[in-house]
Every structure is written in C-alpha cells, then in structure tokens.
Amino acid sequence: MYARLDDAFYGHGKVLNASFEALGLYAVALSYCAQQLTDGALSAGALGLLARGRRDIVDELVALGLWERDLTTDSVTYRVHDYLDVNRSGAQIRRERHATAQRVAQHRMHQGNAVSNTVGNAECTGLEKPARAPSRALRQNLKKSTLTTPRLSADATSKRNADADFGAFWVQYPRKVGKPEAHKAWRQVAEARPPLATLLAGLDRQRCGEQWRESPRFIPHPATWLRRHGWLDETPEQIVAAKRAPSPVANIPNEKPLRTAGEVANVAEILDVLPWRRK
Image (cartoon, rainbow, N blue to C red; front, side, top):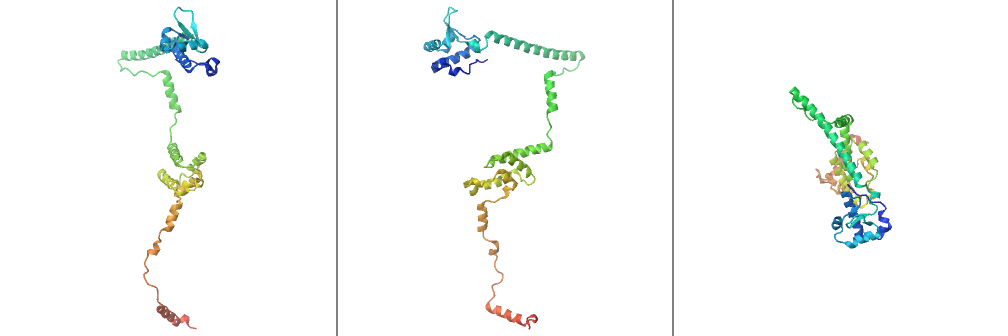
C-alpha cells in the first residue's frame, strides 16, 4: 500500500511557507494514514508516535492549513487536509482486498477439485497416483513457448559467437566511431580474420605504439582498420628497428681475398693470347 501526493505539492503556497520539519512530519503522517487506512485521521497515539512530542510542529501544520483539528470526537485528534481528494478511502481498499481474496480462493478451490477428482479416479482403478496436473493457463503458456521458441542452427550459433567477438574488439578499439559500419566490416573479413586473440594482440601492439598514443588523429576508423587487415601492420618503431638491425650478408666472411695488382696483370696477359682476342 502507498500514499499519493499531488505532483504540484512542492509549489503550493502552504508548502512554501512550511519548515522542513513540518513537511517531514506531513509526509510521515501520509504514510501512516495509508498503511493504517485511517482516511487521513491522526489519533493522539499516532501523534505521539509520529510527532515525538514536538507540539510546535503540529501547531505549525494546523496554522498552515495542512492539518485540521478534528472536533467530531472527544479526544484530541487531527486530520490531514483533503486526504480523500487524492487517496482512496479505507472502505474502498478493504472492498478491493476482499474481492481479490475471493478470486484467489475460488481459483485455488477449482484447482483443488481438479486434482482431487484425478486422484480419486486413480485410487478406484488401483493405479499409481498421478502428479498434479498443470493448470490450463500453464499448459497454454507451455504450448505457446514450444511453438514460438526458435531453435538456433549452426549458422545462427556461429553468428552469435562472431557478434560476441566483435563486442570484445569494439571495447578494445581506441577510436569508437561508425559502429554499424565496423560491424559490417567485421562480417566482411570473416574468412581472412584471424582468431580473436591474434587480432587483439595486433591491435594492442599498435595501441602501445608512439604514433597512436601521441597522435590519436592517425588512428583509423575501426571499419577501415578491419578492411585493410590492420592486425598485420607494424608500428613505426618496429620498422625503424628492422632497418637498424645488421644485415646477415655483412656477417658472411669472404672466402677469397681481393686480387693483387700482379694477379690482375697476369690475367690480362692470358686474355690477350686467347683466340677470340687476336686481330
């Protein structure tokens, strides 16, 4: 059960002139009246519980017109002003509760009769007592769920896994623009795309590079990165390191030393006496 409060309550003239303590007591009193179904009436015992001896706050609410002194009883009681204009009366709530209880009782009695008849027939025939039969509504829901629940094929399962992998890639990619286009590119490179761990390793290698870290404008859109197989790219640092590495050819020793000037002259004399060198 809950109490209702007008949504224009905060701007009412009476509220604007009230202290926060008075407004707090007013709200607590609304909760009490709704839970106890008092139709806005506050007895002396309720005031002792809610106001906690603060007679000045009670007098402030009465002076503002938020509460009214109830003169229809001999005891000192108060009433929340216009409580029933916003909230339902206790009699109305009791009638609704009684009607709900009757519907629940009739439903349970109907279910109990169905089960007892089934069990009685089983006892007469000597058969084992069957389990409690499901209700008609439950049978309809089960039938509906069986008819409408789709069975995922192998392609659908693969597509779902691919979408999950794309979600992991999207979380790691530093430039989050054009997500629909990136998702389209993800599916287009499905055959060339490596396993997710390999792809993320290549992405992480570039994320840690100096170019992406210091110049985010060089980070391509995720769709572009996927279509050009960006996981295979090397960072500028890797390219420079590869150029600075010593060439393996330079480490191979020469099998023969360079020829001397005399050896070169002997070779020239031999070439002069060859037949194809004669004039």
